[in-house]
Length: 170
Image 1 (cartoon, rainbow, N blue to C red):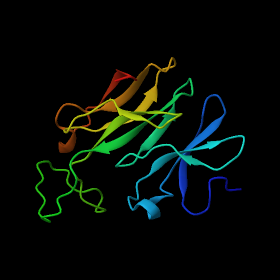
Image 2 (cartoon, rainbow, N blue to C red; image 1 turned 135 degrees about the horizontal axis):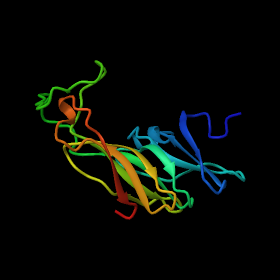
Image 3 (cartoon, rainbow, N blue to C red; image 1 turned 90 degrees about the vertical axis):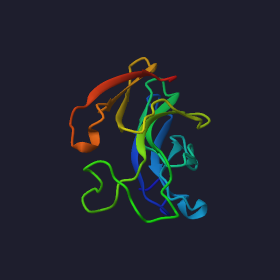
Image 4 (cartoon, helix red, strand yellow; image 1 turned 120 degrees about the vertical axis):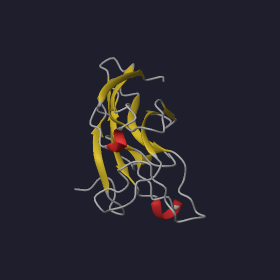
């Protein structure tokens, strides 16, 4: 039985550790705001309508609740917008296209921590030469581990990833 609405698809449902909410990803308001970006939505397990938690410009993915149920961690993409004045693309790495489905842009994925009550988001990693992926909380909700290839060769086919740890506060 669908509980998150039938007007748009939803994905990645995650129970809050305290059992009070289900967080999920959806672009259900894409038609009204024109962005088409996936955001985090919360649904109280005691009933009611889902409410939109985030409004990140480039959306969010790969979400996980903190063990204390006060925050979520996820990934967002940052970087310059595509050029509207030219269709010329200048690539400096061998990886410029993904499985013939589209061109890579200059955006990179970075870790963001979201307050589960009010939706404030704080990006806690950055960098133009790498992607940060697979964020996971520490058991005490004070740190986030993630995976990244910061050798400068990620886009040249390098597979030299390491696990990094950062304070959740940044």
